[in-house]
Length: 175
Ligand SMILES: [Zn+2]
Image (cartoon, rainbow, N blue to C red; front, top):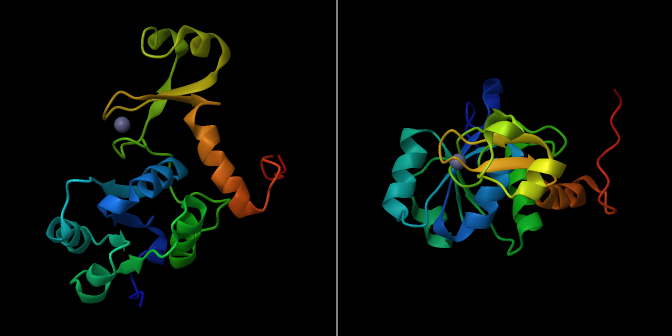
């Protein structure tokens, strides 16, 4: 049961903490625009402490943890594939796939990448990417570089399936 004042209420973007089995989901959700803590080294006690202390939704595939844990907000993920898992999270948090709740985050560290100019990135991305890609951003947390047409497009495929755009085209948007 979602307590009132929990994720989605009051306009504050929901925050999550995911268990070790959900690394792929955590990385995808970060790129989509959700604040997701994830570290494969964290055990149940750490996960619950983070969920309680930071009022995060605990996302887990562990039935026992979901049933007997102390975290107030828990989502037991049942799907074994990424699109299904994303759908479960979106459903629980009432997220519209067309409206990310926050800025895109770094898949690796959950920080928010900032726009970067190609000339600042020499040596950090392959030369052909610097020549051909557009819209670069760099993560202040871990230094990872993102660009349009790179990792984001792979995330896009899952999103398109959720939006019903099976042919991979972005949703129609005016303006
Ligand atoms: Zn990072």
